[in-house]
Image 1 (cartoon, rainbow over the protein chains, first blue to last red):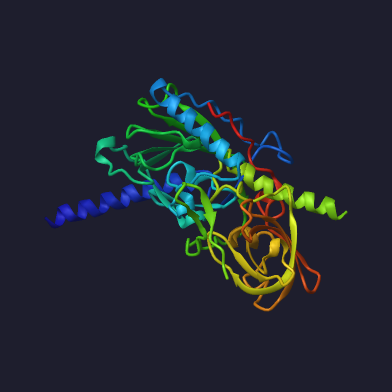
Image 2 (spheres, each protein chain N blue to C red; image 1 turned 120 degrees about the horizontal axis):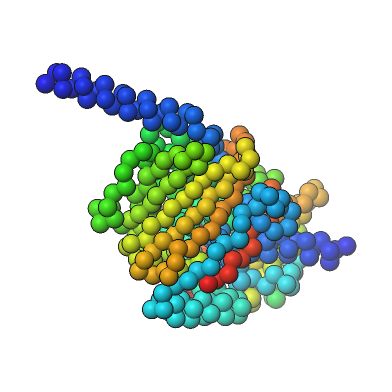
Length: 246
Length: 145
């Protein structure tokens, strides 16, 4: 029995050391990163490539197009439609990875990389060098179950188990079969690209691919974010309104 | 000059709005504010709320536009404002300020800050291009489909 325990301890130390060694030799992603984009002032060599098209299966496309058109029209009228974020619900994956210009903090530790976002203080954990779970064994949630591995200089993250009610990228619907693959790579020591591929054989005709870019924020101290004073609310017509003070 | 400044301020706000349509998400759309027709509010602060998801200024405006003598001003968040040079105590109750804001389109006395001037002459903006992303504009809106 004692020998078994000793073996287990030795094995766990060995595994932990191996995981740490892999992390230690990997590119340095540690710290805070702020989303950056293309557009005016951006270096075209560092800006993310344009996002790919969203092509939904016909059964989903009609409703999606109608909703997008209705939302755009409401926004033109100055009556923007409600969203989960207006109700102070967190974004979840994959939208949490770029919320306006709020930084994200990447924290590698042995066997795990933790990502903390400033907006809504969301936390996701990426377990390194582990097999992914079957989707039907992951309780559906905002962050799902993520595993990661280094492929050369690229951190590849596989995420499944995102709850269907969590709003998707660009408002696209998704099924329980959605799989998110991220490929994180430093394009310079201080610019990080995250190519995100959303695959959903139920909803999408083909995977959606887009890239987020981040700039390193040296010595940045993440700011707390508790959604305590939410003045936006949704009225009886589904419009976003603002509570006024006295 | 004054008009140019206002245009710059509105451009800063629009950059934030643009972020809502691209890969980046935002807390809420700013479409409920009339960013094309800014107004100026001069008054005394009754409260300054350094909170998330937004910072708020409550302002008594004796000669308020649209007949309202009290206005609520929405700002960015502590994170965004801090990166634009604000502190949690940049404004206090009783301070006299002048704010250029985008009013609510529905006519209520609520607004979104463009920039404000403190009684000592210091000017603070609502983040936007100056305080976020190191001056790099957010990604362009990708095609919807």
